[in-house]
Length: 297
Picture 1 (spheres, rainbow, N blue to C red):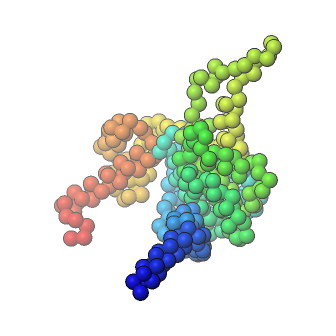
Picture 2 (cartoon, rainbow, N blue to C red):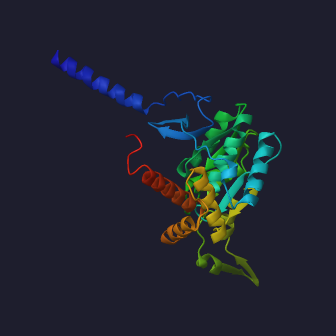
Picture 3 (cartoon, helix red, strand yellow):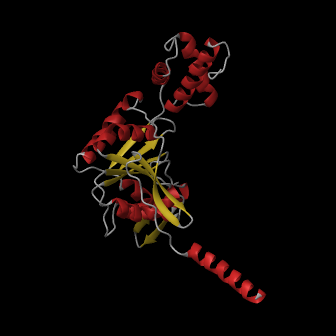
């Protein structure tokens, strides 16, 4: 009997291991739970997960990027209305509002059926599967990848190229890709690549390596470039956020001096730095006004 018990225990252990290896049923997505979703992979299963707390930033909150707002919003409006629209690549300086702009257009057009699915760079190889899962949905989907860049040989590079352009299985009409990056060409380029060439008779053929790298960004039909803010734009953004936080003296000289010092310490005048300063200033002023008491006291 002892031998039989040991045999049964080993059999049960083996069955448990086999069950973990078998494909599991994909959990159904609750499409009514949110306007934004994430592609998640866990324990061998992939699913589209609702984002419970979406950043509620509005287009009017974004200052100093009027041309970029007009370009991206128009493309999004075309897409939501069912007209031809392009995939969008937002590139440029950090903290200048690239990802915030995408969130803002989502919030504006969500009542008209726009939804967003965030896909991490290492999951871009799953793009065809994501497209298949949403292909029959009535909503309009932005597939969003933040801070996108690639090293040579990464599998996501070719997967993204295939979905953007060149696959026999085209992306469905109800999805579009928006990506942000600090690199305009999405991959590092090296001086050596400009020095590589080969001779065939009298003809010189430049290296095709750089062309391969540039080809990915060219598959995005719309480019929106973002640049560092000058001092006036930075201070304007600081004032907007201080008013948002209902901080007193938003345009005073004292506040402006403090905001410029804050930016110097961080080596950047960006929208993100302005927002961080405004939060710090508004919080510290309220703390002083309350005599140092905690909010819940």
